[in-house]
Amino acid sequence: MLAQKTSMPIEVAEKILVDLFNQKILQMVVRVECMNEDNPHYVKFNSLKEYYKASEDEECPECGASLDWKKAKVAFKRGIYR
Image 1 (cartoon, rainbow, N blue to C red):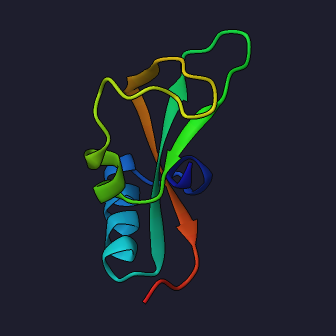
Image 2: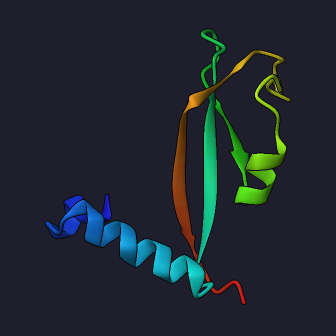
């Protein structure tokens, strides 16, 4: 989205976001889609450590359906996390 809003190359936007994360200015969040077709929703992991700790056969804690690990999305949250 940063690249789209500013018309900068995606590689540059990625580098900026990673640098801001490394400086603890942004927090990283990983979203994994639940495969429940009747009630689409996501499971959120608040860190890479939490995401990597989860196993691929883990089910959605909300409804028990499978999670679509192949379509995990990374997002960044504003704030100072020092």
